[in-house]
Image 1 (tube, rainbow over the protein chains, first blue to last red):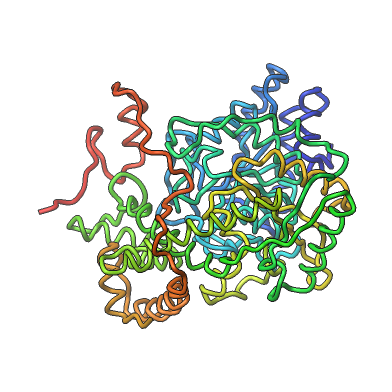
Image 2: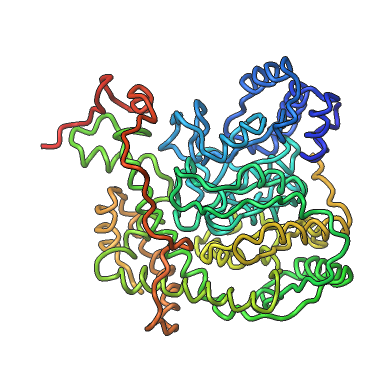
Length: 485
Length: 94
C-alpha cells in the first residue's frame, strides 16, 4: 500500500490487526518514505531499518496479537529516551556513542504493546532549545517548508510524524518542547500532567518540569499512545499513583455543550501575529458553535513565567548535567592526565554552546549569595503561578490560546538566545504548574502558509476531558492536510 | 545586571567548563541580558509564599530494604571509556 504513510496510527493499527497489512510491509513503507523525505527533512539521527524489519518479520510469523493495541505500528523515539541496545545521543557530541542497557519505562510499555521502533529523532541538544538548531549533528527542516524550523526541542519528532515517516513519535516537554514543534509542524502534541508518564529512562534536563508525550497526526492517535504509557512506575519516584482512566472511551462526543473554555487575556493580546490570531479565533468560534461557552480568565502572572522557568530549568539542568564527566559513559578526553582536567576537557569538548550557557546560568543562580535571590525566589513565584491556574480553573474547564505568537520561523532568524526564549511564553506555565497541555493544529496561516496550533491546558489529570474536547473540535474543523514533500 | 567575563570564568570553573576568552565575553553579555530580564521577579511580593520545587509534593518515596540486582557488571561497564572488567578506570587523583 503505497499511501500507507497518509494513514493515521489508528487506521494502521486496525489494518495490522486485521492482517490486511503485514508488520513487515508497514515497516517497509515507512523506510521507503524515510528514504524519500530524509534528504530534505533530516528528522532522524538513527534509522533502525534492519532491526525493525527483523522484528516485524518475527511478529508476522506469529500473527497479529489482539491484546497488543499498537501491534506492528512503526514509531520513532526522541533521542533523549533510552532504548536498550540503541544509540541514544541527546543530539550531543558528549553521548555520541552511548548505548543504554535498558529501556525507558515509556519505551518498554510501547514495545510491550507491540510497537516497532524504527528510528531516533533529532532534537535540540539535551532538549535545550525551541527550534532544533541546537542539535550538535544537523538541522532538521520543517516538512511544510524545509528552510523553516520544525520547532524544538522535539523538532525531529515533529518533523518525522508530519513527513509521514512513522505513525507516531515520542517527544519530551520541559517548557513546550512537544507543543511547539507540534504547532509548527501541524500535528497533535500532548504533554501530560507531571507524573502521569514515568520519567525513568528519560535523560533528565529539568527534573521537576520534564514529561514524555505523544506526537501524532490525530487526537485519537495521541490518546492511544497515552493509554499505553500512562501509569505509576516504582522506578520513578515522581510518578503519581493515580488511576489511569479509559481515555479512548472519552472520545467521540457530538457537541461541546456544558464545556466552558477560559480565554486568558494575556494569551490573546498584543504580540500575536495576525495569521495566528485569525486561525485560533476561528477555532474558538467553532467550539462556540458546537455549544461551548467561553469566558475571559486572568493569568496575571504570565509575564513572570519566562524568568521563573529559565531560572528553575537552568538550575536543574546544571545539576542534572554534572553527571557527564567522562568517567562512566560518554566522551572522555583521553589525553587528560589529571582527574579534574579530564572532567573539564571532556565536558568542554562534548557540550555545545547553548548547553554550556545554561549550565553556567544554572550554576550562577544556585551559587551562594544568589540562591535566594534567584532560585528560591523563582520557586516561590512558581507556586503563585500554579495558584493563578487553580483560580482560573474555578471558572472554566479548560483554557485555550495559541501555542506560539508566530508560525515556524526561518532557520537562523532567532540568533539572540533571549529572543528564542520568548517563543515559549505560552507553553512554559504548564510545565511550571505541572499541568497537562496539548497542541491541536487548527489551520494554515494565511501569510506564512505554515501550520497554526491551538493550545489547551487543563487541571491536573484532566487528560480525558481535554482529549475529548480536542477530538470533537478536530472532527469539526477542515481536515488538516499533510505537508507536501 | 552586569556580569564580567571574570565572573563567568569563576562559574565555569565550578561547572568544570573551560571557556576561551571570546566565549567568556560573549556569555558575560548574554547572561547579563538574561539576568536583567529575570530581575523582573523582584516586582512580586513572595514574603509569605512557600517555594514549590516540584508539582509533585509527596514526600520521600521508599522501597523495601531488599538487595536487588537490576543489571550485570558487564552492562554497567559497557559504556565506560576505560574499564578493566571490574572497575571504571580514571586518571590518578593525587
